[in-house]
Length: 127
Image (cartoon, rainbow, N blue to C red; front, side):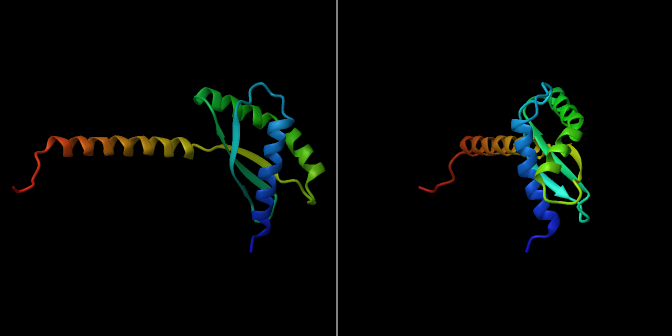
């Protein structure tokens, strides 16, 4: 059974995602996706993990744009959420996708190196 915090996190993920996509006009905010939302047990705060397209500077710019939009986002959430209190929002860059991509690149290189080593060794088959 899902806890209230988990239900709120799922709802916030959907609602904030829609707000970012359709209602924010801040030019600083690039291509952003919400990877995860964690709501506190008392439902007063929510940490929103975002993944951004682009380099570090674009990511920082998008994060600054989202942070400056928090009051506006909370106002829209107050209209759509059926809660007594709209949680305080905190946006956090989620680098797990980039880290996963980096690890896959390393594993691919290791796989290619292993294949090359096997090709360069003489066959051990008896006649």
